[in-house]
Image (cartoon, rainbow, N blue to C red; front, side, top):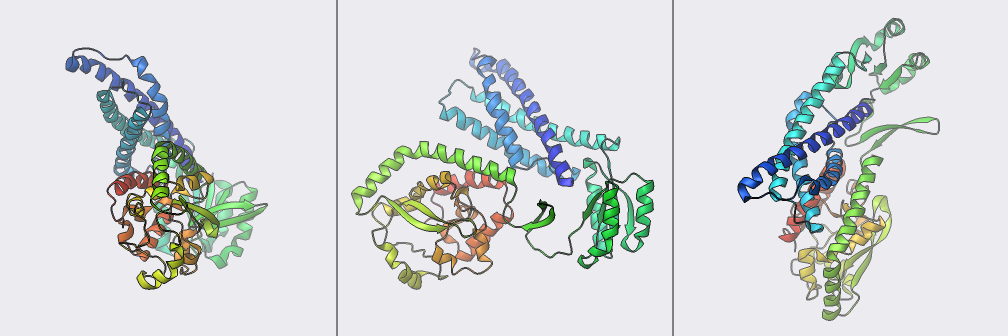
Length: 460
């Protein structure tokens, strides 16, 4: 309920933010229209030529706010960190607007106007954030949509204090702790609930005590009161928790790889649109590369191999061929001779590379065909690199968790040193990505991949 309420409130604030940015758009144009004649001596295009920018700007801004998970926690302590996020969102939004203008060769939009718009947009987002926090807090203080909580506390006083502090910090969501009852005094529960307005009862109990509150749960269900049970008695390190139903059976799910269908849908939309754009941009370079490969060495233009996808699914992986024909047959021998971990081969001056192969590897241009894998749904733009089946057989149990998410063209270790990192370091970064995945993280990795590829940082 807390997360659901938080998401609903965030949607209202997304709309409020977009409205504020639309206001900053007109303010930026007024500033530009006033100052521009003083600088250039004449006025440029009118606002009717600019107004269409509001549509892509509003869409981009909404998606970025969603991707960055803005407004999901409006605790006043987070205002400073949210301001930093809003600065990042503004920078990415302006970058994408410039990309749109460049892609469609729109030259009449003034860069001076874009500059004013960037400054005003950031300020308007900060203002919307501040007003949204104050508005939410004010409404709850006036009793609007308040949910009264009763806590049945356990034996751990420190944990009980943490739970109460957490509930208190959710004031902006209309959550109010009105009563605490020790689990040894459950006989008080019925009388208090019957004589006081209670919306939710939270139980802090041990796993072996679940059967002992069966009657209380049925009583609260009959009265229409929401029951929540803290599951701190179930041990897990990195897992996230969700609750659902399988038919009529309630289920608690523990998972480490992302399971949020809405955000995964957004990730897939980003993969599809990004791959289509990449195919269009790199079509001519890809044709040139294919011709050069054919002219400089014998063999097929594309290298195909079986790779391991999400949770062990096999798929056909495509790259531009960078090695001489028959190089795969030397793989096991080279692993024994050159591999530090017995899994991967990283040779600085690999003798198997063709004349053009070393250049394709250095610039990562050999990976262009993988956009086809992304379009097919085998891969994502961002995710752990897809391993070969024989590599996965050598993985430890912990290392196998890196295949619990769809593989990608780029990931954390590719912007953190690439081939300079050991295999274990790359696995740790992949697991870090899986445990902390968000659309914001994908955006950051994609943006950092560009300079990493251009400067061939860490590439062999």
